[in-house]
Image 1: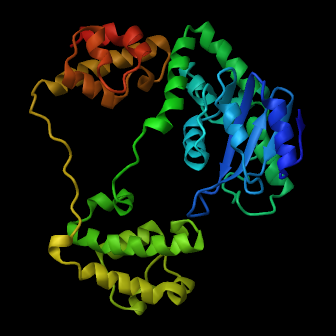
Image 2 (image 1 turned 120 degrees about the vertical axis):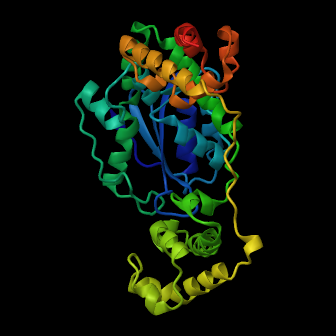
Image 3 (image 1 turned 60 degrees about the vertical axis):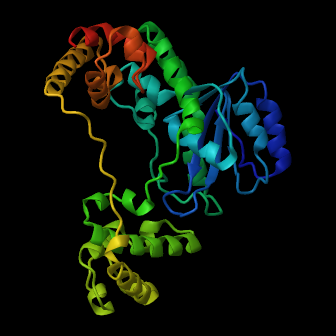
Amino acid sequence: MEVAPLITEPSAFQDLMGQLSDEPCIALDTEASSFHRFHERIGLIQLSNRKKTWLLDPLALDNVGELGTILGSEHGETVVHDADFDLRLLKRMYGFRVRHVFDTLIAAELVNEPELGLASLLKKYFGLQLDKRFQKADWCKRPLTQGMLDYAAMDTRYLIGLRDELAAALRAKGRWDWAKEEFQLLTEIPFQAKEDQTPAFLRLKGAKALKPKELAVLKELHAWRTGVASELDRAAFMVLGNDVLLSLAKEPVSDIGELGRMKGVGPSTIEKYGADIIDALKRGVATPKDLWPRLERPKRFPRDPQLEERVKRLKAVRDKLALEHELRPGIIAANQLLMDIARAMPHGQEGLLAIPGLRNYQAREFGPALLEVL
């Protein structure tokens, strides 16, 4: 399959959009800067049809809106592996909505492939070995090396072929309608999902185990780090690691000497930011008690002595169905969904479908067995 040179000129982009405007199936992938940079951007867009692959440089192109028109068309299908991230990113960056998607990861899961990664699937179906050297490269740094471009092209080069293999397997197993339902939900999620309103410092892993006084210190440290990371456009963990922030929140130090002896705080950090970190610590420690951050208590439900027993019965049936149908248990019903079913005690299919998150195919295929044990 031919790989075209990197497209950086508007005229070349317009020519490509003309070629792809009536294409029935396009493979898509994006490379973003989220690992290296604070301000997330798309650094490369890969597109393939059945014969050729193109690489677009969105940092060089002033306007890629015409691509959104093609991805949002009624007649075309966009093939993506693990589409959720890409679809959210395209919506956030450009407002694009992909109208018809085929997610090869979801398809692989529905036909019970043992390994779901793109590298594993391409090796199984086409005998290909993907080069993973550039997985965490900075795709917004220029120039992009030829090795990086070759790596990126492989992500879409064989994707339509993989789509065909998985679509045939879905139809053979009678699960094509399952996939269509999942794909349709994927295209809606970026436009329906509400942004997480939890303050960013509370979303750090381990933050919710801290006491309110410690959270006050973490809040100040996190605010300082966010400001620096934003100004430098560097990933926040590259300024100061999360583990260091949590350690300092639990046991604040009072001088630069103590700070320099901490694991994860090197001489360059002390030189650049030592005084600012100490200032942030002092502000956090001095926070009045009535201003300490408080965690929201989880929703409490009325006590139901039989709930645990119902969940246990549902899990037993779910796991039996998973073996019989050769599926991962989560495809039939994830644990949280089983809890919701046990709590709601639905009567019939209509009651099942009223439970948020439950798919039509889950209710149709597995609902009767789940309802029976309630």
